[in-house]
Image 1 (cartoon, rainbow, N blue to C red):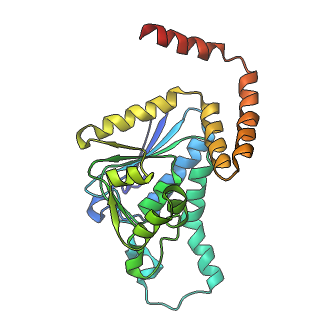
Image 2: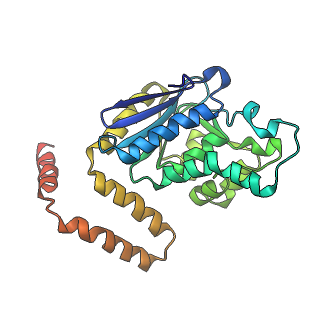
Image 3: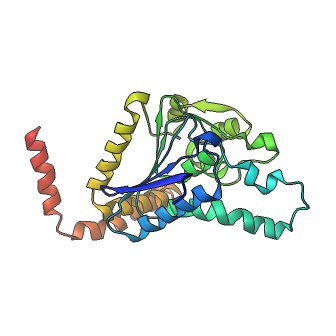
Amino acid sequence: MSEAALREDRDGVVTVTWNRPEKLNAVNQEMLGVLRGALEDLRDRDDLRVLLIKSTGRYFTAGIDLMGSSMSKKEPKTSTVNLRRDYRIPLHVLFDELEAVEKPIVMAIHAPCLGVGVEMAGACDFRLAAEGARFGLPEIDIGVIAGSGGTSRFTRLCGIGWAKWLGMGEQIDAKTAQIAGFVQAVYPQETFDQEVWAFCQRLVSRPAEVIGAVKLAVELCYDLDKQSGRNIERLVNTPLMMRDNSDLVDKVLNKSKKK
């Protein structure tokens, strides 16, 4: 396994840790490859219920590794068709699959997260931040826009104003990211790892098929009018309610009695 990205499977959670602190976790193909393999296993293995993405060092990531990018080479550019093809495959397809897999993806951001880190975060289901985290899209400084979800997903999650703020080079801290709707929770630095793991374990403890249904239903409802959204709820919930859920109901009732 690559030392630039580590993997651990434990208690229903597959954890990918970006481990290139000497390069501020600048994202290269090795790191993406480990993430891609973990995602495929999450999709196919029943024992894996949650994917957790984290990193080591003083940056979550400083962005894409420009030294390994075609942007750093003074070479004649390929055709626009080939450029779009080569641009889509390593990032767009991977991030689309993060959204599509019917299991939760959690990103634990303990420190500055820039560029492709923000773009990947937008494709995850949950973004948990430590107080020392901050977010930015510095692509404008190399003459391009954030084009792997940093523009489209961030606008969808946070609205036009915040998307322009980041897209034009400004940054936001963890609390501002929570206010903007990008981050769902902010935890103290000293308890961050424990809070993240506890959250992942709560996800593992919940019915897997319902977790998958929630993920699909929310995405569908976002793009529909309110009445169509209600119909999606009815359609998704009907087969779930047709099952014998009495064991789950008993579990909830027993938990309530103990409080």
